[in-house]
Length: 106
Picture 1 (cartoon, rainbow, N blue to C red):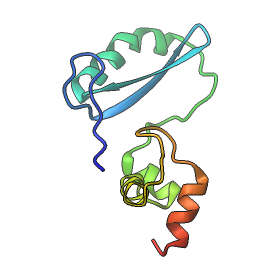
Picture 2: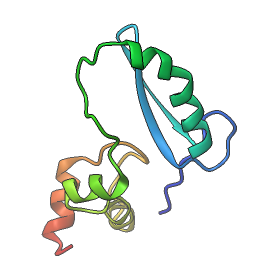
Picture 3: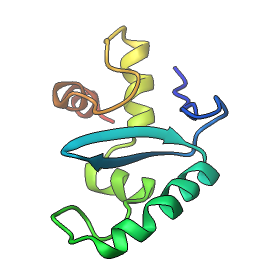
Picture 4: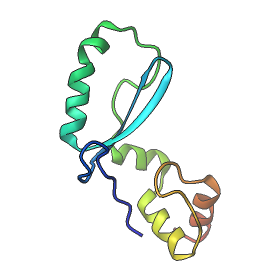
């Protein structure tokens, strides 16, 4: 199984998922590096003037997320797919599936 993100703006291959919130509603969008930079540049005047409510001070890198989870999501998805275990194509992997993956010696 290969999971590929698609840029929600132009349909090209996305590099990252950006999360943002407006009026109490949180959004996620898959973007190329260029579109992500455009979004950040567009909201920068507002974020500089705003008060921080929560969240992390730095963007998490893929390596940091993998280290914190202590597993490779791509590997877990491939393992689950080869065993016909249904999991979402994107987003969080259920803890029970990760436990099965680890119990299998991975």
